[in-house]
Amino acid sequence: METVQITINDKIAVVALDRGRSNPINHQMVKELTAFIKEIEKDDEVGGVILTGKQGFFSSGVDLIEVYGYNEVQVKAFWTDFFELQRVLISFKKPMVAAISGHSPAGGCVLAICCDYRLMAEGEYIIGLNEIPVGIIVPESIFEVYAFWIGTQKAYQYLLEGKLINVNEALKIGLIDEVCAADRLLAQAEKKMRTYMQFSPVTWGQSKLNLRNKLISHLDKDQSTTIDQMLKQWWAPETRAGLEIIIQKLKSKVTSVKN
Image (cartoon, rainbow, N blue to C red):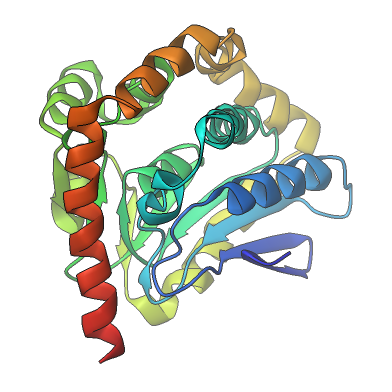
């Protein structure tokens, strides 16, 4: 795999996003993550998955620079597969812990909230869902998963504001479960994973699916209408103009980092 690094040790698979400095999500990453999660769910030698990034970034979200350049067929395939990745993560029956190693806005936050438990490195990092300011329509499935963790009222307000929050506030509202030093992040994530893996995998896994039944049912629905709505807005002139401004800012940041 080119966008993720996999390490399996003592029945725990550590999946480290590994694409550039900030791990932006492109179609290849979506497909590779989906394929791995489907494969590892059937592997009895793996009891759980820790999803992490790299120092400073878990994931900066969807790679707007690349996805902006997709044609109509490519961008529809991307969003269709992104919904499938979310469905696969939510319905994954084994324990999955997010070790959030840095910034985690938008798509990065989506990956994190699909997990059972979230640890975040201490520091000046942000997390949250800011799709609306970017020009992306928020689908019902994203709202349902967000609300599952932080409550309906906050999810509603935060999504409509495109609010990004710091580590301490994320801990306070329940978006993350634990804050720890960056150099202890994976060790703490493994410790949490072991607490889950001590139980019968059948009992634990089926209970997880039962508790997530409503979330899973939302994601099992036909998403074609939602995707069509998103794509219509994606190609709207005002959205494209706004994305061009955002992309120019992103490119400037990349250039300044290189210099």
